[in-house]
Length: 640
Ligand SMILES: *[C@@H]1O[C@H](CO)[C@@H](O)[C@H](O)[C@H]1NC(C)=O
Ligand SMILES: *[C@@H]1O[C@H](CO)[C@@H](O)[C@H](O)[C@H]1NC(C)=O
Ligand SMILES: *[C@@H]1O[C@H](CO)[C@@H](O)[C@H](O)[C@H]1NC(C)=O
Ligand SMILES: *[C@@H]1O[C@H](CO)[C@@H](O)[C@H](O)[C@H]1NC(C)=O
Ligand SMILES: *[C@@H]1O[C@H](CO)[C@@H](O)[C@H](O)[C@H]1NC(C)=O
Image 1 (tube, helix red, strand yellow):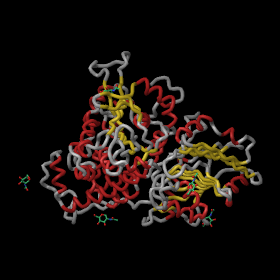
Image 2 (tube, protein in one colour; image 1 turned 30 degrees about the vertical axis):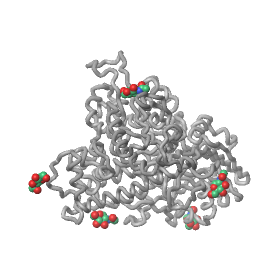
Image 3 (tube, rainbow, N blue to C red; image 1 turned 90 degrees about the vertical axis):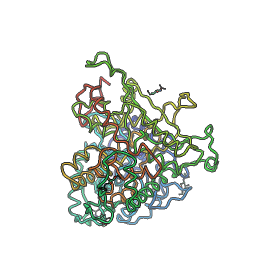
Image 4 (cartoon, rainbow, N blue to C red; image 1 turned 45 degrees about the vertical axis):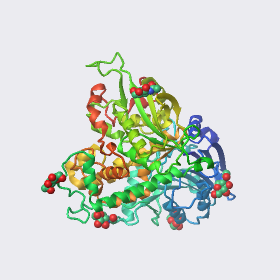
């Protein structure tokens, strides 16, 4: 995870430094603590100027300070991770490899083809000196953050940055839409003294839609997120990027099909491990489940191994808890998503290396002045079901959702139970179950100091809840149980695995049940497709900013291109069966995979938020809705 930033001025009277905010610099440095550098390109005959600022978190290969510049004056900033598609050797750094490949490109089509071939998360800024072009963008799913801002006054600046700071109206940042790659023709813009953008959108190679149709859709979408008054164009020769995944298979399979999804008529609709076992007794079901395990396992492996480890640790075979440190942490709720990821990580993390399981809980002390109908809820501990936090809100009566009621799981019991299952699967692994307890005061303090800037420009109650929870969880500061004694612990792991993407693809949210009841499988297909389409703007930019703030990198196995393509190839009936009860029907294929991996009770855990939702609803009398703008994220917030 790195922090990248670029500021462009067209014939400005101000020094370009004046546009570079000290607070943003500080946020960028937190993302990239290992190296910070700056570079200014002044092209005086064309009267434009660019400032590049690069902040590196060193994870692989040799440390490569950014921005990179080559002999032809090209400049490159990279916040990404190449997991596949372009070869990066063990000792190479992907930044240098990408820059080199870019410099070899002789046309726009070449550049698009290079980015189309990448597998892994990225955002980048590339200055192509010979053509006076500035290229930038985010990967297909928007797994890395990039914000833009344009100050349209004469002499103003256009800015790009991984992270902004909450700022006054009129100077607002917006997320760069993950709709394609953008290009600014600096020469043309300097001549007209006004900014305009060229967009090269993503397109599925086998889509039935005409390019014109895609262009209109994308223009419509992106125009909403454009900085003020900046015109957007597309190339008249219809150049596009190739999407890195196949489109969703919306076939509604016949029940009599070769591999029927829902024909276990005699399932005694019970939520039990035996029910899963019966599905697995079907040969072709089992085959699909194992294909899924294989592809997810590869995704986890890439994310666990693409990381610098010192040699003696790699070759040490005997576990020794005292002097090895964890490199991998999992945002851990004990739910099915995090359990499967932890179990697969265990297969690839070197034997002697601990794995950190980060489990967050908020301790909310009831304020005496608040009215309560009952005192019994005082001092409730509220824990977040971290990997499906949206669910918590969705399942609550919207009127009673209050800011912390989204963290709607009252106990740590499932996390601890999950730990027991993992210990049973691999007793020789050191599993550090990190209990992260957060008090209301600390929450208030850190929200104002840091978290609100990272959530920005998103601003809802839901963003606040999830953002705060993930910030504290990924910070990894808590306590571990050391032979019965709680010991302070700070997770040193630079890579944090999260389960995001499982619910969106496998119909895990309760709104999916509602949708299925109302509109059937067709409606459900549409909903799932839409949710994956908007995951960049709803979640991923925010989560990248939040986790990156600790100098750590978020990695998302369920959003690996191969995993998504595999799941997209399956008809919905193979992935979920919402005619079955909660705890079985949603994310069915993942539950079956978990069973095959040797997990037990966690395979049939329903959304815990649902069970506890009503209790929470009683706890908080606040009448916020999850989608409301959150007042606590405002500049002069007095409360919370
Ligand atoms: C980054 O990797 C390239 C090879 O890909 C290497 O030539 C270069 O020296 C590396 N950068 C640094 C700063 O070590
Ligand atoms: C559109 O793409 C073609 C082919 O790469 C290129 O020749 C042309 O200059 C581009 N048009 C604009 C306006 O950039
Ligand atoms: C359904 O399954 C139960 C338990 O396996 C079995 O006893 C029963 O005969 C089955 N019924 C039918 C109609 O197959
Ligand atoms: C954190 O909360 C858990 C659950 O309530 C409790 O058992 C534990 O003692 C707390 N840890 C610390 C260090 O206070
Ligand atoms: C979609 O699913 C159907 C039913 O399993 C299958 O026959 C078809 O080949 C799939 N299509 C694609 C593109 O994978």
